[in-house]
Amino acid sequence: HSFPTRRSSDLSWITDSSCGRVKVVPFQGFGKHNNVTEIVLQKIVVEWRYNSSLGFFSQMDKAGASFVERFPHWTRAPQQLVMNDKKKHRQLLLSHNRSHYASDGPINYPGEAEFAQKVIEEASKKLNINTFARMGIRIWHVAKEESSFESFVERLNSCFLHRSNALD
Image (cartoon, one colour):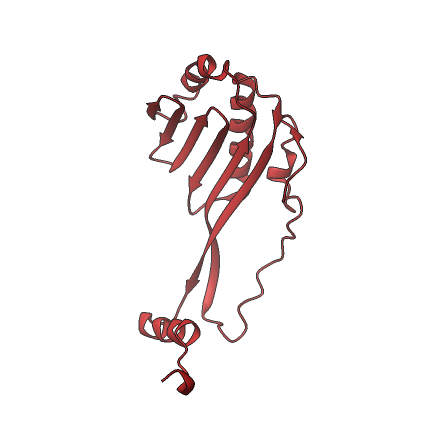
């Protein structure tokens, strides 16, 4: 499935609570699996892709230098720059045809999404990226549960390792 090309200045969908085509529904519980007490946002990754250009490589180091305060740990490879903030568990990757921002949680979604939006806008401007070929956001959640580990394993086994007499 291809997505329409977006102008790099149109990033409002990242902080929009509806997240584009994804409908946000408040947590209602898991029905008979009601031991889940809370769902926590654990990780967010925003990736943007663009057409590669030769001018990117001369701008990548300059762009990276502007992020050193926010991402103090960095690794440079021939075609990419990976920058990390190990205390806040954040990563920024700049590559010749794609970049991504990732944050490990637990995460405050509106605040982290706003930070991601600022980073993407700033990186795109410094790299002279005017059009995105594709953008995506991936989100991981963790479900906290109050049951014992043994009962959790038993429930998983009954769901995923179902045995039938027909198989014996």
